[in-house]
Length: 200
View 1 (cartoon, rainbow, N blue to C red):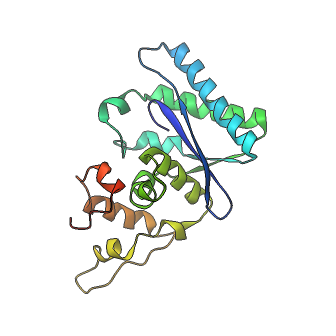
View 2 (cartoon, helix red, strand yellow):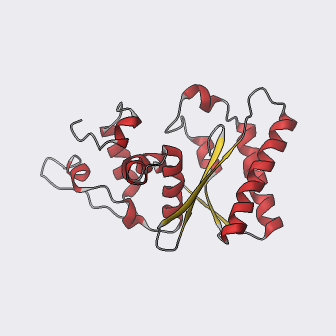
């Protein structure tokens, strides 16, 4: 979910990226009624795509997204336009479309999904950070945590003084990615299209 578009990714049960899609919208200087209609139509497009692909929807938990102090990617000016009201309209529209279309949706904690996408999938697939985040959300929703393991060089940056490398698991992945995010903070995302800048 972004301030001017939804980024979608289609995965198979093994986590293979099959397809991707952007659904754009413009909320600038729109009334509450217009925002409701625009987002309602955009969410309908999401479920149209799910129906076409015969897939359920895995989406970030909007309640958790709202609680984030700041977005993990994008520019602050742009993010400012995704208001609390807009998030509430999106959540309501998703629930309504799910019931109407009988297409299940599943919510996941979006913490660090954009960071995982940036490090692991942007360069690999040549996709935007938003599309990479959408793909990561799908992997988390499918429980495919083994596809979210940082490479050994990243993990080595997190060694303890005793030389112990943290063990990656479903229980530890958020903490590990939080530490990786902090370690690489300040590095612009376009560098990650070339290679991971390990010399931090």
